[in-house]
Image (cartoon, rainbow over all chains, first blue to last red; front, top):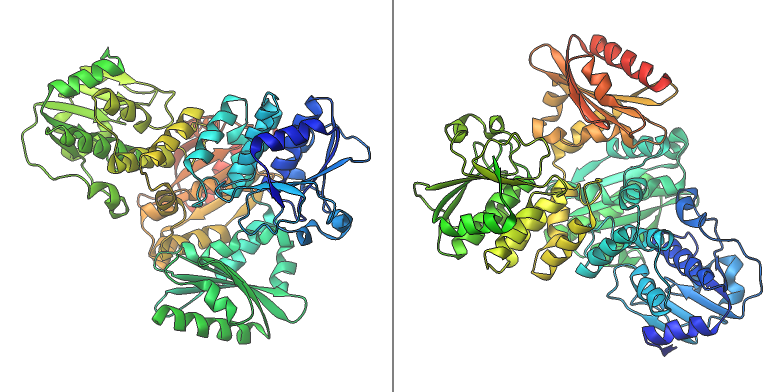
Length: 317
Length: 317
């Protein structure tokens, strides 16, 4: 993949008039903010531009998606945003895997699948790259685009709580507010709104919590029975993995989520003192020092014992 | 109270060398950030400056409080920060109520108790006023002061989630990060850390949740028995009042907290569609449209019935 400058990216986009912008499957606020923000901007220039995703966009992003004019056209230029690897395109978009002209991303692990691209791993959100590119194209960032950019920043930084929220993130958020972004509405919608099902599954997860190793390890289990009883769907369990680690004194938080195939997906979180990626690697998984995962076959008790054994070793080392 | 400009405030502080900075009782992150940030800055100029509070500063703020040199002196100039009214000084500080030379505040309800002052209700946090005053005194904002200022902004805006988080708040947060503020550490400490007791009382509160009026009203009860069983203290219930209103479809969230004197403190929160201040006024309470409170004598069932009756009227009107 040939690395371009932001100016060159803006030039490539200006040169092309029928543009598809590909997003990863299970699109999050940053992917949606990038793809819709960029397409809204390109449409302002009279171009044909459409975001493309193998999954439906969750309805809560309607304040962004409704601002785009739906266009039907054959693309002459394929762009990807916030996409680390083409496997993440999902089944429906595999046809584009080898045809991506331009990649705009912020994942250090980007596989370089496109002809040309720009990857800035220092950007907390990928929309932090999209916004200056839009301005380099000479397009004024209006309220609709600002909402899309702000959404990417706040969702990818966990409402400015994660370590990837830099001064640039905060300053760009301020700029987007100046341009009309509904920051309070967006933050409430993304971080302060829960379905009844989410509330119920969260309560059940809290009830299941057990502690080990002098309360340095907290374990939460979410079984299929709990999912059925609460009526929760997979999306409703987002973020629950972060709860056990929030408790004072807990160094490792483990969340066990039952899967259909006779086992549990383990999400491990640490305060950074312990490398949970090492723990998950024992079971063929991996991830980062403070956030990792693996799959373990077996009953809840079996899986719990296996992962807790490894976690106990790690905190007592 | 004579209104001063920020420049005049800086001049007053520069003219005086033995300064007490008064905080409200039950000090929060903004009060602590203001008082310690300002005193650390004044000490940098060789002045005697000490924060004064009727309550102990919670230990989690040690990263701020440990940066101040403890000084013992008689004050020649009394300043208050983030203090809407002198009743909020608490018992130990009543002696200063009539002796406050300078007030720096951001409460629109400020009673004008000081000789001179500056009140900017548009400032999301009072530290947003303190920071420019420090710079107007010619003091460089270093990492220690930046941590204090950032703490005030993020705590008073609910980690940038409340409507008082303006572009100024975000931009000043970015400036403080540039000056060394440990933004990730502070946000995690303030918003992602829970005691076991807090976790337990929150779980019990969720278990107590009831719905009324087609699920438009959600009610949570926290009894003394629950407090004892969880080992929670009053501070552990902070923020629980916001939980019922987070649920999709809920227009009014009511949290009933049992008090020692045979009744319940009711915290009412709305999405803004219903004015909960009116509901609380029926019982002699008050507040804002989206957040209000009152006290109702009686058993849990009596209190619940009374407040729910009024809430049902409000949502069906």
